[in-house]
Amino acid sequence: MRRTALSLLLVGLFAGIGILVPVQNVAAATQPNAKAGSTAQKASRPTQLSTAAIDQSKQADYNAAKAKAQTDYKTAKAKCRKRSSKAIPGCMTEAKAVRDEALAQAKARWGNPQ
Image (cartoon, rainbow, N blue to C red; front, side, top):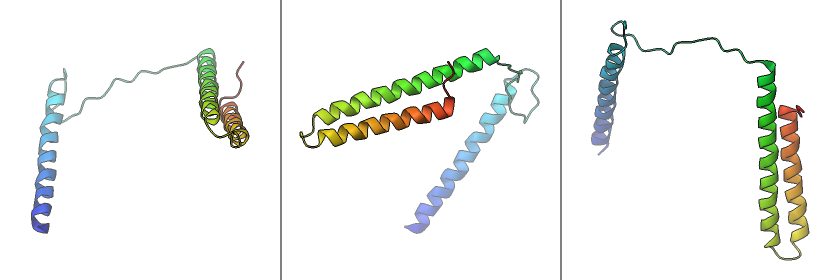
């Protein structure tokens, strides 16, 4: 049983390698002016972002994190309302603490770029 499982594993390994090698050669052969045995590479071009674009990106990330924190808080409040009357205050306090922590993490990570 062990020998069969091991031999099947080895056959699968070699079959997988045998499939990958021709695929790599085909990809290189379809590229214009490609040398045999080379792999295709993406042309790199320098990208420069302005500080305004970076600030907009940070603002968008910060706003998304705030929105997620608020949505999670509303969901937690809805779950708290379904609990017994004695458990509601503790549940609400925990939901507020989780929201405040998420907002603090968002502010620490992205700041408040307004």
